[in-house]
Image (cartoon, rainbow, N blue to C red):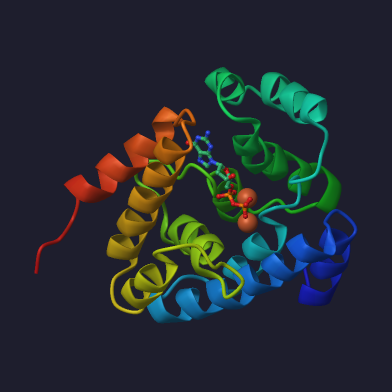
Length: 189
Ligand code: DGI
Ligand code: FE
Ligand code: FE
């Protein structure tokens, strides 16, 4: 799908603010894909569609998670997590994207997962460091992202977990599993 067609589909689904975030993720994902040798076109399309389901009603997302056999434990955790797997389903059925790698990058963009693909890592990190993000620690992750994709991911997950702890929020176990997997496979140079 061409960029302009994808952006048009997504714009209808999002607020102006979330659309601007999406444009930032798109540019950042393209940069990261070039830097780390991921498929640039897939990174572009996955980034454009990553938050497609962000504003869908909770009940619709809950239904998709149950009917599509996504892990049901998602439903016991914060509903903010649901737009990622629900989005993967809706992007396939409504936008006609069939590429599994793109759909998985969308599905795992919030929690990550162990053994993430290069494309999944690019989208996860681009979502965290796009230019519109302003939270504490983001500049450190932006610096790391220039040198080492996994180290940047580890730092971003550490920051996210610390942020959720501070807010007294539950933490979805897959977030820990992603973190542990990356740390175990760390290459110390
Ligand atoms: O959709 P975005 O805002 O661009 O970014 P995202 O898909 O990473 O979603 C971030 C939101 O999801 C943010 O409000 C924090 C929340 N979140 C992510 N992981 C967890 C989580 N919330 C809880 N409670 N537990 C998690 O593990
Ligand atoms: Fe998201
Ligand atoms: Fe996002």
